[in-house]
Amino acid sequence: MDDQELIDLFRKSGFKVTAQRLAVGKNLLSREDHPSAEQIYQSLKKEYPTISLGTIYKTVHLLKELGLIQELGFHEGSIRYDSHRDLHINTVCTTCGKINDHHPKNFQSLWNKILSQLDFEPTGQRIDVYYGCSECKNKT
Amino acid sequence: MDDQELIDLFRKSGFKVTAQRLAVGKNLLSREDHPSAEQIYQSLKKEYPTISLGTIYKTVHLLKELGLIQELGFHEGSIRYDSHRDLHINTVCTTCGKINDHHPKNFQSLWNKILSQLDFEPTGQRIDVYYGCSECKNKT
DNA sequence: GTAACTGCAAACGCTTTGCACTCCC
DNA sequence: GGGAGTGCAAAGCGTTTGCAGTTAC
Image (cartoon, rainbow over all chains, first blue to last red; front, side, top):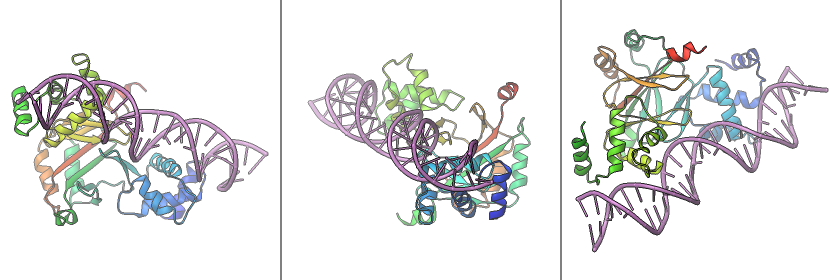
């Protein structure tokens, strides 16, 4: 999704286009990790020194309403934001908390086989796999 | 897991056996839903009027350390506890928040096919499927 | 011009922590 | 008897809310 599509989406949905919204939207759509609100805030406040954490939260909720991102809650109390709405696995390092997307081969067809046995129509999913990443293992 | 096994597990791991720990453990292992700490507290305070929410949290962390339960964080900020450590899908109603376990046929073998493509050894997983349950749909 | 948005700070809710008292072993 | 565990209340922390000032359109 390029800048213009994002602008059009905001307008089409009846929301004003502001520098802050574009910044948060572009940031989230471009990064591969799954940042927390605080991390988004940190990475934007150099370019937008007056942006506030409150605005990050409000914008992130807006992006979620628009279907652009998914919220992933973790038990340490933090929420991470995932802009990749296609079917994928989140690989989560249980030590450092690093999260990455993963797309196994034939994943869609295998997943469909699993879903075909449910007696309802799913509206979405969240699939996490936990492990210890190589960097964390090497520290021991 | 019966009461004696739970008692033995506490002892074997070097923890004292108290009425509160047994109550929380038995409650969590016996129920099919995935309660929050508050829900566990509510269901126990009739029988144990002096039990505190703090003790629920401490006990739940202990049970997690012992590998008896899994913590599921959700973006509404709540944490739910799941005692079913075997491979399963959590079906989550996005309206009322109801969670149930689901065991599709051949799930283990399909899941193994997916995992075989990862380049690391997973330590666990969390699989949620979101939907609108029939009760919530009927309300509209 | 005006309704929506931002930034700030206070409020919120769930979870954790500290500590004196209690109870298991 | 002694150290681990409980219960209470206060503190912590990420998130939400309220509102005066600002900005998109």
